[in-house]
Amino acid sequence: MTTTTTGFPDPAEDFTTSEGLRALLIRLHEGGEDAWVHDPVARDLMEFAADKYRALARKHKLDTWEAVAAAFDAMQYRSTREANDPWAIITHAVRITCIYEERAQGLLCSVHQARRAHVSAFHDPERFSDRDTAALADYHPAFHTTDTHPSDIDTEPRDGLGSAQACMSAESAAEDAIAILCLLDWPADTARASVEHVCGALVKAGTRQSAYEALRRDRHARALLDLPRRSWTALLKALLGNPNPAYAATTTGRGVLLRLLLGETLDLLLRDDDLILALALAAPHSRGGEPS
Image 1 (cartoon, one colour):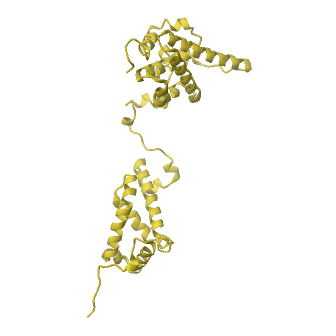
Image 2 (image 1 turned 45 degrees about the vertical axis):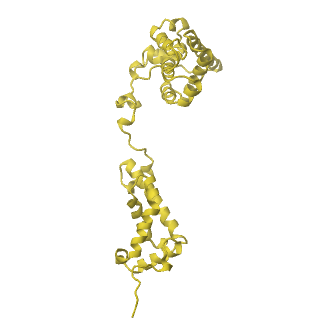
Image 3 (image 1 turned 90 degrees about the vertical axis):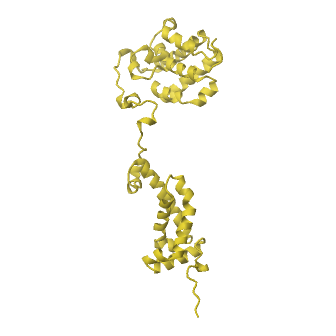
């Protein structure tokens, strides 16, 4: 009488180890395509792979069985069967596949295309709902068209004296801006620190619009300056100008710093009722009580 052990894997084929997995893959390869369909150990292997790569698939926002399919493909290769550590080869293949699967979903293309460097270099498509403004013309620079006025053109200094005069003009504009804030009940130390921080960001950004967008999102700077949101927003619009292209050719769009550099005096700025009212109401320690 012969006793069979069908359904019980050979201890030598313990697929949780590298040697056991190699032995199992070799037997399944020699058994042909039907071996993967009817072999109970093959089924247990794929269930083990599902548990093993479930977290990796979840990390890349994929279904578990997408990772299992990638593991199954890697198990068919001769290089996997002959590797020193078959599980390491399979894990690497699954990780690469998950990365490009997620990239393909973000780029709205096939996985084959996402694997190409010139395609994966692009960023994911952006939806209008991802922006603070719904209209494309409000944030895309390609749609920003403004009329150029002679007073808006900055002439470059021709010699060292011109550079020194430009530097002095910038410093003078910053000091006048600080003076305006102090006259409107802004604390002197807060006014100076805020204006100097805005001027530094403006130098790094290169343009008033870029500086405004960067500073508007800079919560760290606002926390260091101890300014509430309403004060910070009003200050940026006053110093750098309203970024809306519709105001580009107006005093509201130019901002205090540019107006001072263009030759406007401190007395003239103090006659701008809209500017003065906005800064006075935004003063962080005005008589309106604690800053909100």
